[in-house]
Amino acid sequence: MQLFEPEEVIVERGSEASAIYRNLRNALPHIPFRIVDAVSTENGRIDFSAFSFGDAKKRLFLTRHKGEFLKKCPGSDGQVCCNYFVINFASNCPMDCSYCYLQEYLADNPELKVFSNVDDLLTEADELLTKHRRFFFRIGTGEITDSLALDPYIGFAREIVPFFAEQPNVLLELKTKSDCVEGLLVLDPKDRVVVSWSMNPQRVIDLDEHGTASLSERLLAARRCQDKGYRLAFHFDPIVEYPNWESDYKEMLDQTFSSVDWRRIAWLSMGVLRDTPSLKRIIRDRFPRTQLLTGEQVLCPDGKLRYFQPMRVDIYRKMLRWIRRAAPTVKVYLCMESKEVWEQVFGFAPSCEKELGNQMAPSL
Ligand code: SF4
Image 1 (cartoon, rainbow, N blue to C red):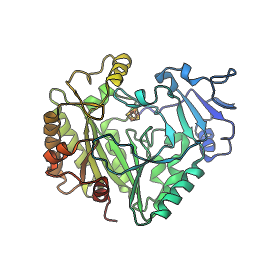
Image 2: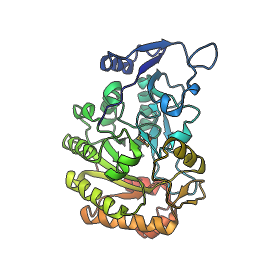
Image 3: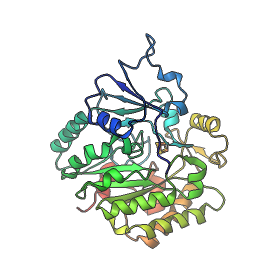
């Protein structure tokens, strides 16, 4: 995979003492660093809103995070939620998938930011996990960024994995479309860290997952992590329907299960392509050659567009059948789907998010 390299690193004053700053300086000695007082549209300071979404990804901005780091995953109205927590250690992503919802979600705030105050993040996580020792948490870092694509520069994994590896009531999930796992391979996850990949056939990667690792690079990275004691997860999401999707997805599943030991897979998820009317307009403008916009979609109660329900059920059932052939007892869930779809695919729907969270908790 071609590693992303920022054109410039812009550091908000006060972040120079952080470990992330040190890691960046060591990894990018040839890139210009600029210290600024603050980001503001006033007084001639940097105005990130002047950059297009694509241009904003070319510079890396290091700043302190002012709010809370840990949040419950917002889920989607009317859909079954999997009771997941997210840590936002960065915002936006150096890769550029056509369907990425961040194009809409971060439209007014597109700068590629990394937060320097990791010590505050760990303090917050420690308080939450200590206060609720009887509750089993799944916490992920890949909601508004990719968990590992910046890791070769920022070294975030080595700042947090040792902490989470010692916690009795959590699994930390690092979710990526990169193969940037070198930093993980020297750490001991002690069975508390899941490295997960969003997966698609190479055809979809070529057309719509720009700047990401190829399918075989993702699987090689997964194998290397598994060999070092990490649990794995795979997210077949977004599943894209097109002529011959079945043979491509079946082949991708065969490749996946022949590359890793499925018994050490913590969970799999499935979700079809979803977008919104305004995201579709952005995709059309930024990626006129995409093939994502050809299929018919319907507006769902949560305001998202998805394929027709019978088509979604058909896709999930087929995927599940192919998964079960290779990995009969692996845990599988649907991402952002309705109870009706759950029932038609699995024959049941979790009665509440806690039940689903418990189902996903691994035997440790
Ligand atoms: S890897 Fe994820 S966060 Fe990054 S551009 Fe693709 S969909 Fe967006």
